[in-house]
Image (cartoon, rainbow, N blue to C red; front, top):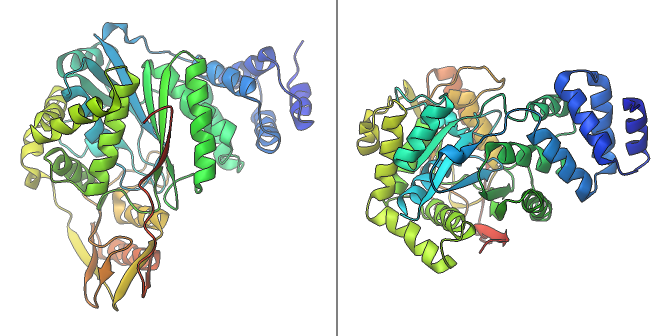
Length: 438
């Protein structure tokens, strides 16, 4: 008979757990038969001793099958998904999914996304800044929308990978979040349970990401691709920069507006380049054609307006008002706005992106705890970014919030996040490298 005590001791000695032992552990986590203190002890042992690839593959599979597993056979054609490991100003899903759906290649995007927590935003919160949009939908409605429009983005169901939900809650309070095997298995368990056959991962690294270095990001990316391929999925990963907020907008409705501007062909250059690469890799991974052809197809959707129309179609099908896509002045404005101006001249040499995200959260755009209500109109527009030249009095950012007190707190945090110098910093690549993609 298996005992949790023996499994903890085995992992503490650096020994490899068997498939039977790992599945016993995940089953006990799911049904609550293993107490939290023993689960925490195992997480700490894994944190310090690591896991082999076979252990990680088994752990991911067991977590993926600890609850519901989506059957997407009711959706016509090939299904592709995209996942970001989290960042500041990351509104790529709202741009990439419509681009893929509009490319006319028979690839659908049936996506489940999360809400924001801490300094990172969530796609579901952003969508809900459009009045009427319902992000909690039954499966038949979800399938119907994807079949009619080619895409749908809904909230993640709590019935998917419940073992991961319990493990993450304990990791969060035992300082074991930053562990590559546990991060990779957590992300991929949910992706595998979500059912898509083709998955593109956007692995962020830098000050605004959970993974701070390119080396660690590459390690995580390769591991997640291996997990997906071991499970029979086609997976590619892009390792991308998050030392600077993505685009200029940070905050829910502000990011939706920027996404719409990008779909209209007027987006920030870096944001457009990254979204094009992600969308093209989704088509490429799904076998549509060579990368150049895939890139041309998705780029065309920004020029001909089809991607923007796809977003409007999806919003209407989800109960929202599509007029917001064509007239962004309809979005509710915040009660208070304030500007942060430069006190001197020079160059912006660094932006602590995590602090920008925290400042946006203080303004009301994010939440400190899971069920906290957010202000959809709150956030930050960055007018200057890393590498930009500034003069005394130049507006660095505009802050939007509901109270003077929040504006003052956000202003102080944002001011402390920006560093200036006499010379421009060396420009970093937006996309460091890809794993199994182009």
